Image: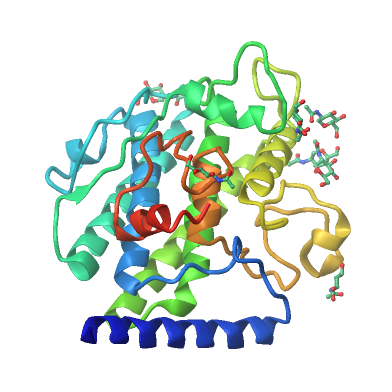
Length: 312
Ligand SMILES: *[C@@H]1O[C@H](CO)[C@@H](O)[C@H](O)[C@H]1NC(C)=O
Ligand SMILES: *[C@@H]1O[C@H](CO)[C@@H](O)[C@H](O)[C@H]1NC(C)=O
Ligand SMILES: *[C@@H]1O[C@H](CO)[C@@H](O)[C@H](O)[C@H]1NC(C)=O
Ligand SMILES: *[C@@H]1O[C@H](CO)[C@@H](O)[C@H](O)[C@H]1NC(C)=O
Ligand SMILES: *[C@@H]1O[C@H](CO)[C@@H](O)[C@H](O)[C@H]1NC(C)=O
Ligand SMILES: *[C@@H]1O[C@H](CO)[C@@H](O)[C@H](O)[C@H]1NC(C)=O
Ligand SMILES: *[C@@H]1O[C@H](CO)[C@@H](O)[C@H](O)[C@H]1NC(C)=O
């Protein structure tokens, strides 16, 4: 009984706090787009799924090794399906490896400082080219031959930008809600690092904006536009992903069409909630219907509560 009334007060305070936030922004997001109620621990445990996805993707593609090969005992669970070495240029390979190694460090930080346990459960990942190719179905684009993220540097950078962007957007969204100094230090540190990582990948993509994505005739810029369209459609909460070139009103200070770093009208990062991210990474547009890169869903308390509450 005591536990229940405690929980009620907690929920009431969170809701009250949220409604002031909403007033301050004068935009009332629908329940599909509001931040999800969860403790700091639950929020970071949720993030571990996204970190594992990024680390496994970029490490297996760059050096053909996964988290457990590099840091045994940190995570446990099924090996990812379909990952393979990507045909990357040496510079990109090196940067991807570094980014993946740093992500292992972040997972360990969360395990040590926040969750105080390891190994952490690893979700089933499907890193096969076919799983990524399905994203294009969302906007009815069919490519021949089918899109293969591992085929070349241009294609792989798009997949890496995808994983990195969502991690950054998630941290930008949870940062204001993190409670506790060590917890905030950790989350701020990871958020800053992930912002940098996203910037590096977008910058690599931007250097290639006008190059074609072999074997197709369209360019890297085309592909970033398509990818942004897919994210926005699946997320279902407006425009939060942008291509490398945008109309002036979306550029910084409305004065540039260059858009290496996607950001809102105040040049602050777009944020995405747990629900929005699930809708996107599942490719189903439904936070409780797993698919895509996470065929069996996420691990952790917050995800299981989202399932129980049927928050699609
Ligand atoms: C890339 O790295 C490999 C292995 O380190 C090396 O054999 C190859 O010459 C490098 N290629 C270029 C273009 O530098
Ligand atoms: C894709 O095709 C389906 C079926 O034809 C249609 O309902 C949907 O609106 C299309 N989506 C886009 C983004 O064009
Ligand atoms: C791509 O082409 C456009 C139009 O020619 C040009 O303005 C832009 O600078 C080019 N971008 C890069 C990165 O070369
Ligand atoms: C990408 O989208 C922007 C507008 O959103 C447009 O100006 C640009 O021409 C598009 N680029 C390509 C290559 O599709
Ligand atoms: C790529 O961009 C060019 C130039 O903006 C445009 O003509 C073409 O339709 C785009 N292709 C795709 C597949 O979006
Ligand atoms: C840029 O345009 C948007 C509307 O598209 C407006 O809300 C914003 O104030 C403008 N920013 C500046 C710096 O002019
Ligand atoms: C989301 O998926 C769940 C599980 O498949 C299903 O029960 C629910 O009806 C779906 N929600 C929407 C809005 O389609």
